[in-house]
Length: 421
Image (tube, rainbow, N blue to C red; front, side):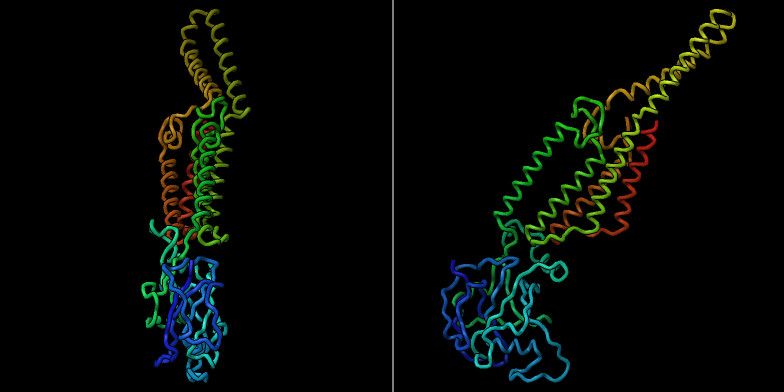
């Protein structure tokens, strides 16, 4: 595809002493020019549509009277003399839809020599994504995409200075005025997006099959059928944050090529999910210990011995037997309670349904579990929205993270009494 803007302009300098933007090209696809080339000598075939440019590409801007812009950046007048007064030297800047995306040293203006003041000059801009410099500008350009602009987005290109000054756009003599110095900005490469989506979908399919046939997200137990074990709230929360953060990291990388996108809040959320799952597993493991079982068995044997002794006394003294009836009945009731506890330890827990399993403690709905589920969902929605809009993982306030920590701590705290009794 032929790339670029073709323009035919006169070779005289502007009356107001300004440069003009006259053409845009991708690096290595621009026309050959030198100091003797004037605007009257440029005549390329017009482009049928804006060309595509993306992060890590180099955009070449052609300027008429380019030396005037270079002088202005270096605090020089049209004749190259130092400007008196307050003036700070600055770089040239590239603007996409008004967002400053790249800078270039004034010395890099090619073809802007004194003998070519009314001819062509060109400056190169490398489109790079920098977390510390232009992250917000890229987010405004590439974040919150419309469906029809998901892969590519038309943007207007302008050249100027870092302080916000923009050079005028050449109109006279343009072969394709409808382009208006626009390019199509590549958000995500279709091939990479499709390939990554297929890999992620495959992993999700494998994961879903595993959670249906194994106890990957269920409480550990002695049941031979993993699908019958109750769902674990802590393990589900840990899986939720794992897949959310992994998918967000992949989405940001596909657009920006940035790898340093993991934030402190992200690590805290993953650590909190893992810590809650670990604490829950330790508490569950303590429910069926040898010591607890041994204590119950010893207590049952003592009560059985007391009942047997009371029976012998009843046979020896029929009159006193009437007084022992109440004692025997009370002892038998205590023995029945201990036998129920032993049966509960031996009987594997059964799953009711996903929502009942994660919201119930035993047979009753628990508000602390409901609170943990709600806050996990709320932070998850905020997380997704922030990644979609700003192409960055969020930094949550410490107060909000503390609230999430309190929910997890409350969940573990209420789990302890049920584990001990």
